[in-house]
Image (cartoon, rainbow, N blue to C red; front, side, top):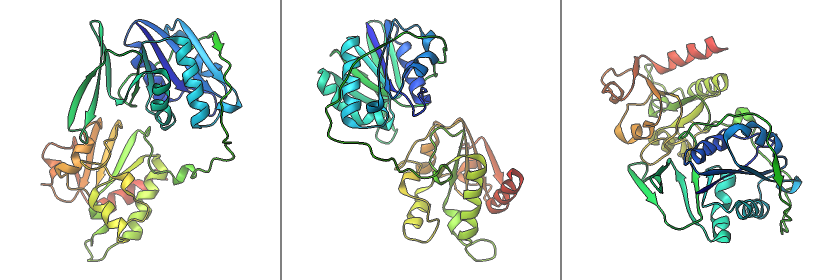
Amino acid sequence: MNVLFLAHTEKDGSLGKAAAEALGAAKGLGGELIVGLFGAEVQRAADAVAGCGAAKFYGVAGTDFADARYASDAAAAEAIAKAAGADIIVAPSTSRMSRVAAGVGMRLGAKVDTRLTGLEAVGDKVVGTRWFYRQRLLGKIERDARPWLVTVDSGCFNAVQAPGSASVELLSVAPATRSEVVEIIAPAADAQTIRPDAKLLLVAGAGWGKSQADGQKHVDEAARLILGLLSATQASLGSSKSLVDQSGEGAALPFLTHMHQVGQTGATPRHPKGLATCCHGEEPHVVGWRFIGERRAINLDANCGWAQGKADVLYVADAFAVMSKLVDLLK
């Protein structure tokens, strides 16, 4: 069985965390491992994993492949896959790879499955697992068809770090495209509040938008404290559905969107640690925390849902006071 690890490099030519984890998934299948990379420059990324045991390194490099663009990315991935002749193609579930996975599969005559959270060789078969129905059903996937292209989620496999010196065979690819990447407009780093690779997930609950002990709402102070902690810790921000709904109506925190929602109808993030603030720990919200390594919560109610075995540590305190002190200490 030939296994191709297929990924794009980062802007600086390095290999991203999600890609390094996907390489770990590919390597775990056994068989002959082949590494395929595309981007503006691929040698640095190849050298970072040169000792992974790959039999061959293929690359497609040049300015045409520096930025995410369907035509050029699909052409590069197709060329690498055909050169490798692999049975299984493993790629990371980044936005860039996910955009072209289906098209590349069509060009190769391959079957495609995305967002796998598990991948292993069982006897002479390859078995993948992924979640369905908002992470409530775990399904197993097997396919006899080859090639089989899969993308794997970040946070599910051990990243490969095996630096050395790799010999990369560069393929010549001339993408047929009429589009040109003129400029990439992105928010400043401090304005980004959803950070999948952050070590801490901070979740704000509905209590931030409700009346406090003095009978008044302190939405402006809540926004200052939450954004202050995010800035100081570079944590990722999540929210309960109730607070997101309040924000959508203009009644609470204006920087929250449904993209921040964590829970049964929201995201299921994977961070080493999580801190819930002004949340009550109801089941629909807590279901989104199942893959958080260490869960802590701040709530004035000592009998809230977090205290019923849903949090490793519960601080019975006023979240406004605790967060204010934290921000001051971190400054």
